[in-house]
Image 1 (cartoon, rainbow, N blue to C red):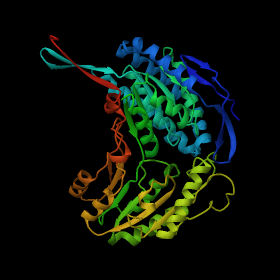
Image 2 (image 1 turned 30 degrees about the horizontal axis):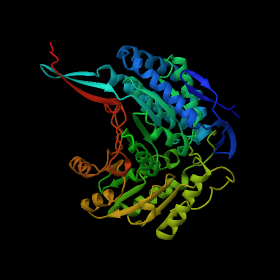
Image 3 (image 1 turned 45 degrees about the horizontal axis):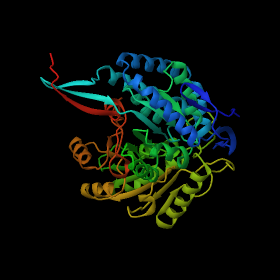
Image 4 (image 1 turned 45 degrees about the vertical axis):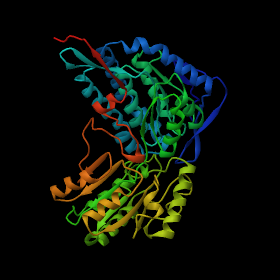
Length: 475
């Protein structure tokens, strides 16, 4: 079991202002694997004060100085990948193979994307021959990150914030804080000036709310549930700080009659990846009636053959969900689905052979209609709902009939259909025919999936103010 870790404030590891221990639970075993301290208001204030004091000098450093430190951080991150993989696997249940390849890999990928975007990024732009547009750091930023893709989200917030000259306070999820603590070690080793990066562990009700309402915080960047995003927006309203949100999703995967024969199987695999704990997962499979029975059989076979096992086990299994609360929520939604639709794979309880740990059976429901609970609520577990459609118009209407708008998916061999449907889907991202997004692509959603964009140039611009200056004679 790891020893209790304290906070990183003003370039130092510091003790909490008050004793407030919190047990971190390994979801594969239900056993305590670490103890952290949850911060209180004194800890939050200390971190904000350190970030505020460091802002003036850090915001005036050169682009080259900031890039050099980020490159140093990238070297440290790459050299300590195995530590990070083990931490994430233990704290949130990602199988170790997935943790090494995708959870850790997402961090390296995004650091590289930001460095590429930063190289040609201009903070001064000619508007006319006598007017400049300046892009300036917004100030002190509170970064509140989730447990499901820890490094993906920490990197997507910390790197663009510090690259643009902001100073930050990171609050990682208290459920999965070990990767955040390790990342703070990397930042310290890289040599960022005191106060530029600070980390305070805490829960949403405590440190999260304090940061959101703090008058000395200029911006909050949050990834998590829509419910929490609404609460943060309300807390931030009194100080009119900027709030950038990346929230939930209920992605539709539209499989047309001419789609690849493997489209349904591949869609189910994608839905179950990371044990379904991804906001951009394709959890609603919309299938043309001519392919419907085939798709149900194919997705159900994938679910039945998906191995579920402990995160420490080598292989391509899916692991547990993150916590008892998450397990209970998913079980409740599966039970609701069984009263609404036709269960074709999975169901209630743990998979056979697993009597401990927060393991969920990969589950498929057929004959779902879009007004059902399982088609509207974000399950955040390995649960797939399959819905038939007859026409393109019907498919688009079903896909858009959701409060969310993060990622939708289109499978068809007809390029015109693919482009036409993509234009009409109300989501921040549309993945077509399994083609992944490029490095630096803007990640974010419409509607209740949020209002910000992360990654590349768009991610840098999230942390900048725009200033117009007249009478600036340009060469």
